[in-house]
Amino acid sequence: MRYLIAVVMSSLCFIQASCPAAHRVSYQTRTGASDGAQIYLADPTVFYDKGVYYLYGTGKVNRGFQVYTSEDLIHWNKPAGADDGLALQKDDVYGSGGFWAPQVFRYGGKYYMAYTADEHIAIAESDSPLGPFTQKIKKPLHTVTKAIDPFVFIDDNGKKYLYFVRLQQGNRIYVAALQDDLSDIRPATMASCLNAVDQPQKWENLAAKTWTVTEGPTVLKYQGLYYLFYSANGFKSIYYAVGCAVAKTPLGPWKKYSGNPILNKDMIGENGPGHGDFFKTKNGNYDYVFHTHYSDSRVGPRKAAVIKGRFVRNHGNPRMKFYKNSFYYLKTP
Figure 1 (cartoon, rainbow, N blue to C red):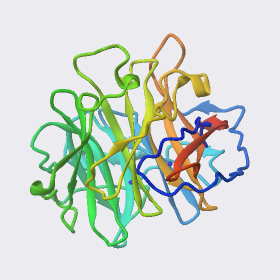
Figure 2 (spheres, rainbow, N blue to C red):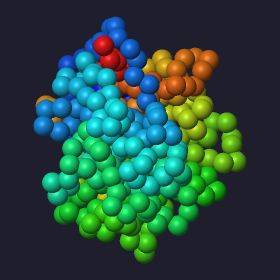
Figure 3 (cartoon, rainbow, N blue to C red):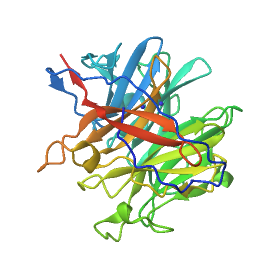
């Protein structure tokens, strides 16, 4: 339809700009529920609407997407979707399986879910964040190749963009403008954002794989710049982590932050942190919801977590900083 770890601030800037003095950012540490059942979701996303937080993610991969709710981000209710806990179920939409990486957003009085199924991308709609999300015409978007991990960004001028991952010589992040009615992309606008082959950074492929991975895009606009957050290294790797790139337009070109990764296992002491999404809390600040591995010796089921983030400035353009002490896992009673 998104509180995090301290990042060592480099003197290098994303884009050349004036360099005002650094300022202190304060935040209140939030501690997750100490008891209760861990929420197991990969590729999680949180949507905030009318005093309620809605949590979705990859879980019931052959059925659709469950939704959890909370009013304080600490105490989460068990799945509350319109159809047996599911906000979207496969009989109502395109796809027979492989339901991955949803995103929920509101537009024109309706709620929309962009999601992956059968390694294609589709968008369904609903009158409620609880669903049911449905499609009048059960079809995917035309992304030319197989594609996953959609993220819809609506700019201040109303223009809409789809960020997604093409499965072509690696997992590569692309962008395309969307039709105003969200029915499909505008193929002529499709452009590459970034990958781990062109201008690679070492952290993106520590295992030296031939099939490189950049995925899980999410985009924020802040002070006139566009920030693209993404994950790299492959989700099975303990070194799966989060990086950032910045651009002056939603179509790029994108410049990777020299201080990447901005969230990794060394920062929070958990393997494989990544593929998350930013969301604004009730007080207007940013949180980042993401997943980690199940344990030091096992990847799944992956565990949903939240950490705080803030844009800070130090000798250049604002950068996202994550606060280690605010990291916690999400649980139900």
